[in-house]
Length: 208
Image (cartoon, rainbow, N blue to C red; front, side, top):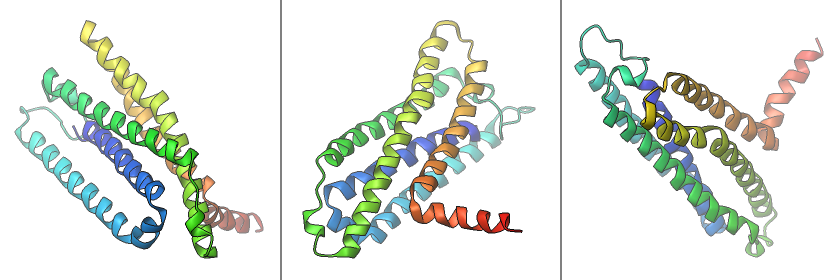
């Protein structure tokens, strides 16, 4: 149960990130001035959703039939098929909504200009960094679409026909976890300040 709901959390995180990027591209000056408030609001909403997710997980665990381990088991052992497909439908919908917003962000990024930022070197550096970060997120959403969303959609269509989904469940669990790692790695490697924070200690260790 927890595993399946954690997949939804990843989708929600992508959706929140798409809103964050779209806000920056729509009004970079406003984003620069209010970035702490924007981040605080997004984090608060994600925290609320996480609390609701954990609460639902605990409830399902406590009300599950006896002799059924619900902490980290396959969701099909706990919930009926209608609920299972409903959860996956919600997950796919959130992902597709995020992709739609990323599509808008990509169009804005293509025609993005920072004329109002030229008067401040600090603002120019900020905008350049944010644009680079946005491109990184766009790369990650393409990877997510290919390796996560497409298999989920295929799984839902396939299992409606024959109901055999055990292998696909394990695959989706693997790519969900692996995709999260890849996204973090992309962000760290493509952001110069974060990359230097990781690379410098490693280089120092190599000196000994």
